[in-house]
Length: 175
Image 1 (tube, rainbow, N blue to C red):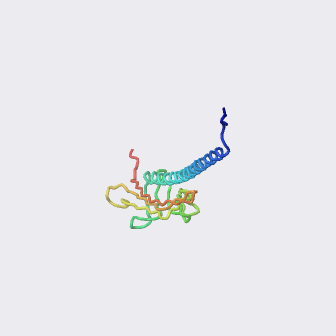
Image 2: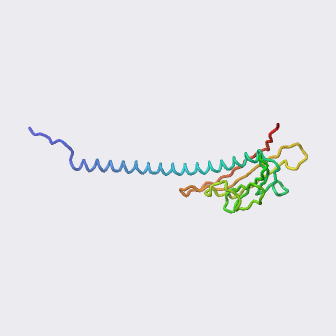
Image 3: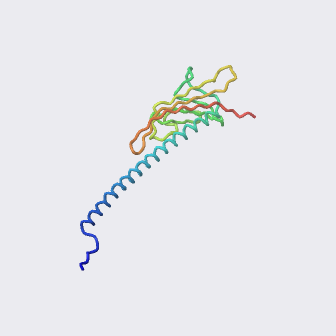
């Protein structure tokens, strides 16, 4: 009786290693793409969180402020001033580096004295304040609406446009 040899031939080993290599190449490229998308999502979330924090901080200060001043007679402006809850002068404006700036105290608000509220990767193209209910004889609470238009650039080189509109009505503490 003749015995059949057991084991794998060289050709079978080469084919199986080739198939394994192709499968690993596909899995590795999918994994690297997943990591890249995760980094991009994290960067975008970080920028959105920064913009949300800046907007909420502005609206909270405006809500508790008094003596709103838009600087122009028609109720819309690009620089908005008011007195905060401690009686300090507060101003918000668009800085020349396209970030939102905040000035506090009695001095004139210029780029050098304005503290940036937004990340430099967020480019603000337009910042407009609309003020209603200031200087009227009606018993009306002043309302401020802020519109922000701009773009966010992630580390991956992608740019996302955004438009934000937020409103705040003056909330004075009644004792």
